[in-house]
Structures are given as C-alpha cells and as structure tokens.
Length: 116
Length: 113
Image (cartoon, rainbow over all chains, first blue to last red):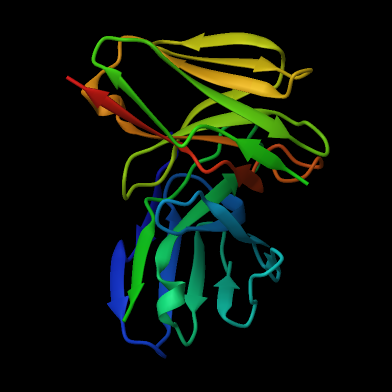
C-alpha cells in the first residue's frame, strides 16, 4: 500500500498558539488531499479538500480562517491550526488521493493535538 | 445527505465469528467502505463493495445489499489483534467514490481470550 507520513505525530501547545501539521505521500503523487479530524470516541469528520495548487474547499461548519490548508506540491500538504483553543484538541488525519485511484484510499498515521 | 448506523460496541471470544452490521441512507449510492482503526492510529482499508453480494478476503468478508441499504463485515477466526474500531463509510456525495467519505461512528470490537 501507499506510504503516508504525518509530522508531528503528537503535539501539545498553549491556547492561542498556531500549530502546523505536515502530511507527505512518500511513494506516490497526491493530486487531492483530504483532511479529517476525530474527537475522542467519535468518527472521522471531513474538514476540507484541497487540490494541488488550488485553494481548499471546506466542509460546512469548518472555519477556513482557522484551519489553513496549503497543498503546494503533489507530495506535501500542510494544515495549520491558528490560534488554537482547547476545543481544537483532536486527532487530525490526512488522506492523500493518487490520480487514477479506484477503490482504495489511504490515510496518514494522524497527529494528536492537545491544546492546554 | 448521508446517514450511517452501526452498533457502538461488540464483544467476542478468540476463534469465534462476528458480524458487524451497518445500515446507511445516501442521496446517491456509490459504494461502501469498511475500515479498521486501532486506538490512536489511522484507519486502514478493509473492503469496498459497490455491487450486491459477499466479497471474501481472507478472514474478513463484506456483504452488501443495496436495496436494503445494508452491509455487514464478517470476521472469522477472531484473533486478539482484531480488537479495534470498525468503521463503515460511504462517499459524501454522489459525484465521487473516493476522498470525501462520510463515516459512521464505528463499532468497537473487543476480542477476549
């Protein structure tokens, strides 16, 4: 299967700071990147979709100015949580999609964000 | 819109068979996915069904009935390592199969020795 990495795997920060999460597809090119988040004991919720070189499309209820997504290359996308608050504490997972994929979608290992 | 319903928790013993059900409602069906997720880890792909019937893949099989809006994941010869959350998911919109997925809340399976 495809290899996807996320960095950092976990981060603890103070309220009000910004946190950047990187997602890399290591052995394929991701034309599209999806970002999900998962609160404890909840399922994954799609946050946004981005295509390489384009602005991201955000799901209803997700603040685009708070969750900045950059998909500058086919192998790297970043999610920045700006002015993080405790309610932003969650498990953030990226899911890069390769061109031509039919029925299998891969996920990154996730980043556990804890905002104090 | 999409709606998925699956049991919250299930338990079984090692070596047994367990069936995890999923019922769904979609505005336009375009396949159903099953994922396995261990605590603190990302989901891993198990199966994708778009046609009715049973698809077998080793110890895991997945069944789909489009007319009933129903799917199940069958796990045979359970092992301790199968203890995980099992997520049922459908495409979030009728225009795509991948990427924008709508997930159920997951079924937490605990396998006892």
